[in-house]
Length: 605
Image (cartoon, rainbow, N blue to C red; front, side, top):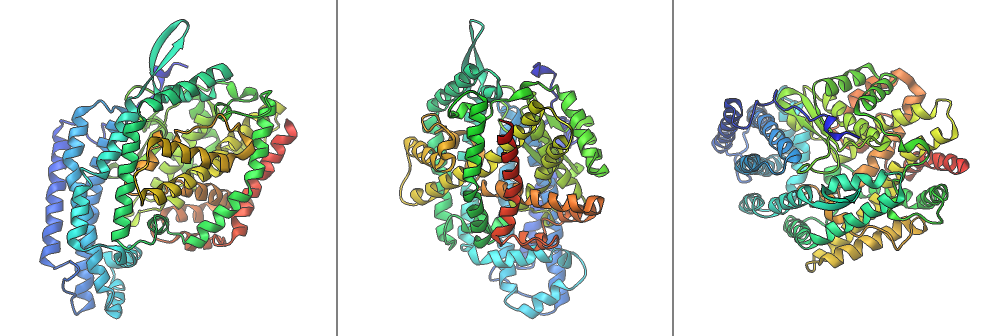
């Protein structure tokens, strides 16, 4: 397809340019806001050894003053960060943007420090329980942020001293953040020699990765082999990056009194260990069904067993290429069957150039949606190749944009959604489209195409993410003892893939370098980025069953759920729909939906 016709996102309504007075003025303002926040904190002795006003009204006023200043600073800082990240993620060669981001990063560190100091103080305040609860009952910002405040109190138990937390935040700029940025630069600029029609061209690795959906197995295998050679060439610096990130997390967890590497991610996900174990256990028991799907697909491809490069091989009419315009029309039509608000949001995203779809040199791989707070908009990055998989990816990211839309009007500290719930709207969007297609009269090849799109994605989220979870768990355990080599990372990854894919894939042709390019492993602020995706898929499917039962009556409660994901635990929000996520039965019921589609897929083979 002609990738040059694909849209780039427009950030000009955020700031006209990097050298514009608007952008420069915003940078100056956020620095003033951070200084004002520091002055306010100092004046009111907001620190672990600080004072606690005797009167609840006075305490509520001080808390509200800090919350209001922090929220204002976050709106501007997050907008500047989104603008710069949006520029760099689509053009990593933009040295001006990279320099400006590095100049702004100390502001992010100062905001992080302010929040740490506030958490230490509010933890002290909460020891005087009656006074703290009375302050939360005072109308205003304190009352509106009661969930945030109580969560800060709980997490204050896992803080180092103020001096240590300040030092850790400042060192992050030249430490774990630097390792993460290096991984992004290496992977976004990596080129792969590709021979076609007698000539060799250096293609971005993201373009070669998109060849995994080519109908021709020869091309898919060549792309797989070329990609592995490319990762082989940069394995040492990427192994250093991963060692740097995971090693720093291990040290910080130990000094903060965290039980293990999962402790903080579970708190961030707002679920308990029992819930995670129930979900992972149900997922493990579903592996045989997914292996039957892999084996059935192999038969359709005329093979005994699939290799890694066959995972995304198209079936039936799946080789059809969608233009971006066709994808837009298709998505809007299906969204319209669900919600007028959803289709309206999608139209805005397409018409107002929120989407960057063209794969190109210097652009990061994968897909994501980011919020731009100052303009109450989102921006979506994808690498569109015309496949049904990419159409579903676009619908998925529009779900994140819809989630953002539902939270408009909430303050930044009220919008902090855990990854477990952040996938709810995106998964539901994909389910809307898939289910609508499957409900139509279909020819065999058409049905296979749609089922394959759904099952391929579900297999990634249940089976492959299970392998990523096992990989990261062992990496953390071993990194606590010593650094790991690139060979170690590859060996752990291959073992995890064999344990999860089992006889569903040829063990001779797996992907030892999945750790090299997945940016989630290099997240400095969120370990175990993987299991929340599985939570999102299964939770989204569970909600979709309720939607099928209730119809339009479901929508107000659904929108309210999305609006409040920053102000409740996953279990409490799920309970509003009568769902008990701590019971294994909930996860098994969601997996039964997938397994039923696997059975239907097998019957068509």
